[in-house]
Image (cartoon, rainbow, N blue to C red; front, side, top):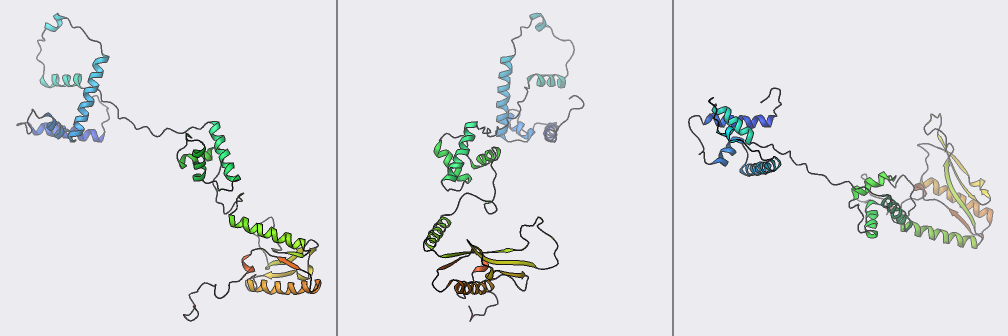
Length: 317
């Protein structure tokens, strides 16, 4: 073996097993010489099935090598000559092994899945099906989009959601939570509530009712800085407005602190006073409507609807 050749750890282990096996047979063969497979299994430390596969690969390599090499004609004079030098058994055996042993084949690497490369038409089809889902008020999830693509084209190259998600990122789509972004879709219940609201508004306007809209805000809302140092409590504003502007007598401006916060009790007291004031200003027969948003502090659970607390006694539950 030439100097400087690197021998791997697995190959060294195989060499050590062969050396140990040969040295143990100095005084006689432990395994019969005619049982070649058993001797090779003991030498190499592999299973018989692996040995048979190696021998099959070796025979295939020998046949391929013989087909490639041209046949050589040897002269009878050279063939009849005999060397006067006595050849050593070890050197002749090594030369014979080197000439007979074929080159092993490199292990076959398993090719992975061929990457899916979409054409411009396929990219356009993905965008079209995405917009079609939006127009039909269907959430454009990966599952829905993949089903639409397969329903429209049975031979569409994308077969898995992972591949579709990767291509969606590639053509410019982004996956975000619907909790923090605006989407052009609404639940069916929201659409129904909105239709009821518009119908009632049309009825009130047709009856010449006085319509007020209520809203709440902070005095420092919309500032450039989101977090600043202040030396006082925040100021809250609660008011109603109509097409004629704010109803100034009902405007409520108060300081927002831990001791005085916006809750259902405070809002109900304010809306009661405002309703009495509107009735006094517009007479007993004028139809008045106050529209409020669905803020959490605009309503309060009744005692039967409140969830049980740990401090409650059995009688209260």
